[in-house]
Length: 510
Ligand code: XMP
Image (cartoon, rainbow, N blue to C red; front, top):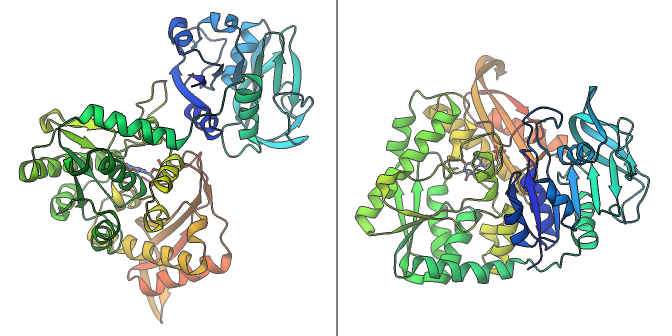
């Protein structure tokens, strides 16, 4: 299979490059920036992308690739820091500018013959850098510029080396996918034969090969990832699979009844339901720190799995629907990405559980899993459900988790979701929920003064949760949701609407 290699210099977006290239059906792998030349050569990539990264090329010790990649005779595309590496390597000059360029910029295309083929003359692009080229190297020409970057895109066509200062991989850049497709398919000539059907066939065989006669426990939440995983496992190993659904006391309204019903009705998979509400909530008492909460929840899941193993085992494997973004944002990527949040299913299982981990979706993005779900004929009841985080409402409760805050978040979130469904907005957005913290505000209810909680509504649009934007739902709809929450949810005085995109914010507040 033809492939593109992305060398990761530590940008939060590195894997997104990989993801976007796969979007256009070209297989793409992310490797650490310092991968030896022999490893890269063995993969026989059709092209190499150098990612962005937080460092400055002129600093001692800044990450550099093996220089011989530039002599492999295959196209190279540098993005942001990768672009600066190219300028530096070929004797141009990079320096720090006082006006750091962060956010949207207008990119004017000066040459649309290859990298920018089919791209509008002027597009919005996403910039995130303080360093930029002061001089570009000899034999490079300028392909595009912005007001602040005279050389926002450069190329040396003889050597097939391209550099772009902006990030085509984030959804904020218009036609960014097309730019990456031009690089991977037209400039690098990679064939687009990476499809989800190929992935399914390959993965079923892999699961069979790994599991053999062992038994597998699969944690299922009713969300798309774990459901799709269970269906795929069921196809691969049939009754050697037992799935477990855990009520951790932090589920959405009525979820503990709905999910087992849906699984029974549509999937026909052996499922054990465990009510572990008491043990999760008592361990979380008095804990306000977000990472501490995640750690405790992870530990309690492990305890529940141990009990299930004793009662229904033996099992040799635990399967989890961990996705690539969970891996990256937990700081377990192959490159130097910073830890954003410890996703509870990524930290690894404690040794005492004595279970091996099966994570077939570890390199996939959410929308790739959705495509697999469609190919596996999983009903829309599952596919269309919004993602819900493993640690549940805990990540939507800021500060200590109390029964009062759980009640507020659960009820308010159900109002948000139901109003979106009624108005037809549910399917247009990625996630929609209410969050609550400890801040109180004064209100008037009837003729009485109330001093109640502030609830924040967060509704976001996204392709894969790596970047997201707040949803511009109609004011009237926000108003209706707000009125319903203050009228129907006891103890709420104010409702606010979150207008932060990701980045710089994240989707969940904790
Ligand atoms: P953030 O808040 O990191 O969320 O922007 C990105 C996506 O991941 C979901 N999320 C999680 N999913 N375990 C999960 O299975 C977790 O610990 C977790 N934390 C966040 C979040 O709902 C969003 O879709």
